[in-house]
Image 1 (cartoon, rainbow, N blue to C red):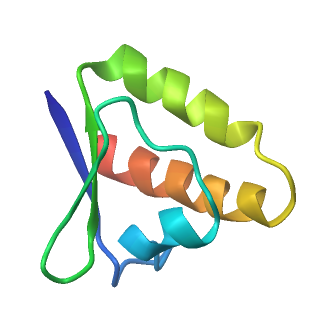
Image 2: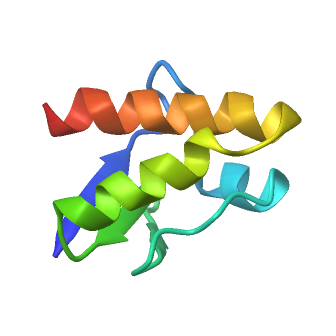
Image 3: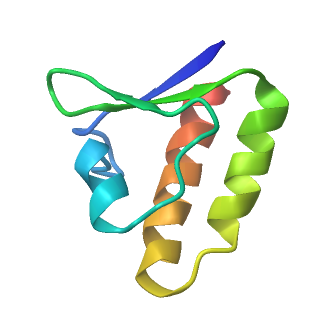
Length: 79
């Protein structure tokens, strides 16, 4: 299982609440919340990560901006 933690104090300022506020799609295995409100995205493998980021790229309006921020955070963390 892949666990990608997006720190809420990082450049994107994404946290667990962002997924609820913007009605963003949830990764296939879900999201865990850490004590500091960081979001931990859960995937089985890298292919699921790719499919998920493709979904985020298709979001409209204000969702798209946040989706792009999540994609950037994933990209920074997966390198």
